[in-house]
Amino acid sequence: MIFITVGSQKFQFNRLLKGIDELVANHTVEEEVFVQTGYSVYETKNCKFKQFLDRDEFAEIVDKANIVITHGGTGAIIAAVKKGKKVIAVPRRVKYGEHVDDHQIQIVRQFKELDLIFECDDCEKLGEALEYVKKTKFKDYQSNTQAIIDSIEQFIHE
Image 1 (cartoon, rainbow, N blue to C red):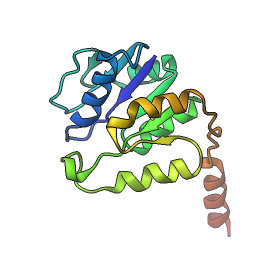
Image 2 (tube, rainbow, N blue to C red):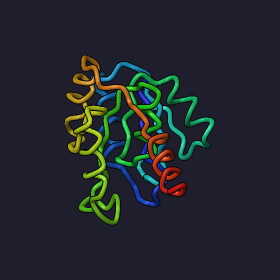
Image 3 (tube, helix red, strand yellow):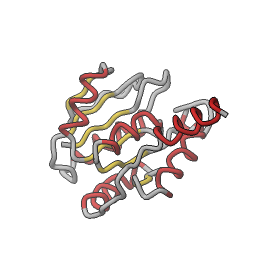
Image 4 (cartoon, one colour):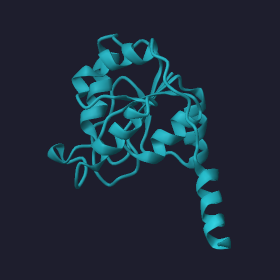
């Protein structure tokens, strides 16, 4: 299964939803696709969808998915890579009215440089991105939370 999540920002992400809907319509994507649409006004015609998911629903769908296609939000990316999912991240862009700035480009590039995800800024290339991630092994996510906690504790004790 492929899971598409656009997050909960109060902006549309129609560009991504249209892109995946076209791939399903022309049978480029044969797998089941589930989409969390958020505030997008475009309703997918060829995929199951729900506007918003609670934490449990989100976690359950990520667990079922082989591939997660997400916006460039850190929470969604980390949730997927922590579970060993193949991730395609599509950063929201200000020029399409998807966000207030282009900070998601930098977020996505950082995860890409760590070899944890695949970056796809052009929704017309989603089909190519899917083929690439299906045959690519990415690095496993390594949390540095404990190192940060240890560093803070050391600082406090000094």
